[in-house]
Image: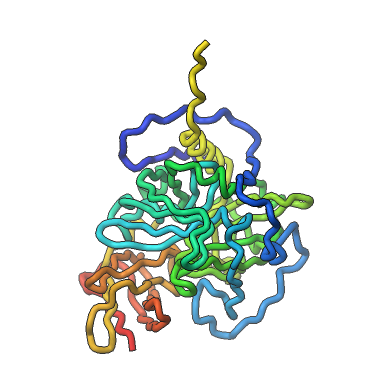
Length: 304
Length: 86
């Protein structure tokens, strides 16, 4: 069993005690914004499938992360769930900048890839600041934006930049999740994950300049101890996007991974062409719970 | 591990050799895991990135869609990676 420890960007902060252990599945938040059903929701992959979704292949894929013909679809009603829970990220670090994707997991907690908050290779360490824009659609910013400066990752990412633990957190000062809602997260065993249709949506740099949300889905191809592999088209900028499923009978999006790598991250011995996400395993689940707890204000003291 | 990669600099230039600020730089193909982050070039047309050992293809794309790719050997190198558009 792997022990993971949270590592936070050095700022003055008081950590609240981590939440007590609980079943490894949280509940999604609907948010206070409209509950109008998204028309794009018809695109979502729900439940399991006996077969992967058919797709058109070319013999020589040009891009490693768009696998064959680009089947990503632009989401226009990003002001509706679940799309509004997904955030465009603009990172400023070390005199440079980058784009990525994050998603709400609680009122003040955004999950993303570890390399979006800490990277020796791209940032020379921690990001300086990240602008978080939930539900962005081009120049439309339906829920405003916030600039965050408090981040966290886990020790295995910060020490080794291990792709299996490429998971990070952005702590928000404003409870944006109370408006837009948030994803449930779950640490599911292999047997439960197998054959699920998985959804990935984020803000790529090749279409929309990191300002438009693009979505694709397909069946999970393979599950290892720490990663989920899928034949879902993505591109740079979608780092940190949620990889989520819909269990039978549920309309709540359940994140099971954090999209982070293109096909170069899939071992050739697997015999598959796939992108991948670090998997939400029990240790990662507990870490995410601790981040949510850290962002949960303490109840006001009674004056009685 | 990505920590064994070495940071380098990529520079995006236009057809006239002028630096292109605000270009999107992405690793679009590689023989080793590379994060799916996209970097933006600064006023000098430069962005910092690290590549582990292996071979990679970088793509630079301007906001108006002009793009170019370059094949790069990863690992440590003092050489700046140049991507020329147009």
